[in-house]
Length: 480
Ligand code: ATP
Image (cartoon, rainbow, N blue to C red; front, side):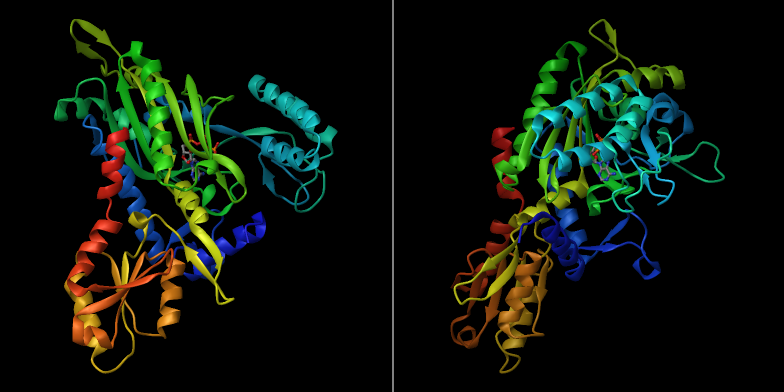
């Protein structure tokens, strides 16, 4: 099943059919690179957020949170460099009217065409890399012409010149108001408020989860590259002389955090140093993940030094420096920036499996980490009569405020199990005739499908222990 394109199409369809992700505005034909999270999707997403948030703010005593606004003073984007430098390259095909990022066009072409000729591939990519560094747009266009690259869909070569394109969304009729392209600036602009209100001392961090918006030219690959997405970012403020120490520390910690998700160590391409740094960064590293379409960035760790605070001091004319032990300085910053939707896709794609069963049939199962599953357990009556639904409903009502559960009696027990497998529910508890005599139910495990009998009183404790965040946070606290 895991042949890339077939598996990816299957994943997108599974996400829709089982209420994880829908194309936005679908009844009007959809909107390019915008998606909505359905009932199971939002639960999974909230669980991922909670895991990240608690890992940052509970496991590190010197990290606090913030929730800043999406719209900010226009000068923020001058200070941050986004107005001048948050650009992508753009090329249009005049026949198809499609827009592309020229470097991606070249990379994808070369990957396919010179798959068996790594030397040639390397040579072209190295020339591309040099031209990008020198911002030599003419040479990149020459490369497209020399390689004879066609529009991947319409197969014509009628290209425009390459030009730059600012990726921020501007609000119409509002002078210089933008939707934020990263959450980080809300942290920098509140740096002093947080120091004062929370008596923070360097080194310390500020974490934030929130929406960001980028007018991506090459927006495809489902929720991997969207125009509206969510980021989980943390800016860590430190003494300038400790830049390398903290940069190494955060690279190491973030990788350990990812590996704790147990998605498979081979799925991570660990920490590739950036060749092309973002305009604000002095050093940068990616954690790359093996998505269904190949290895791609899932999280970036950057040293932003004092780029942002220095520019905000200049533009706002407010002092943001620290006076401490007779020293007067601007702290440096290490940033960890993780895309929530990309992490969702990483978890979803590694968990979705088709399994052949001993009876010759197969099942689709979403083997999510238990603590992330949207539904923690399902309660069923074996049949819809003889008082079994009433007992099952009573059990459900007794424990449902502590955990996200479902009660279901709409289909046969086999079909009910399959549905819970497909949405990743770790446990199913079934009330049968023995329940009436012994107060026990069968407990079925999602992963090995084994069943055992347990007392009704144990259900709540098992769900809590096996599907809560406590276990994984305790484990992480020992390695962080
Ligand atoms: P890319 O090179 O893939 O465009 P980036 O280097 O521009 O990513 P950053 O600006 O470092 O990304 O943003 C931090 C994180 O935010 C990324 O690692 C990614 O997980 C997420 N992210 C960035 N752009 C998008 C997007 N358009 N859709 C979904 N997630 C995104």
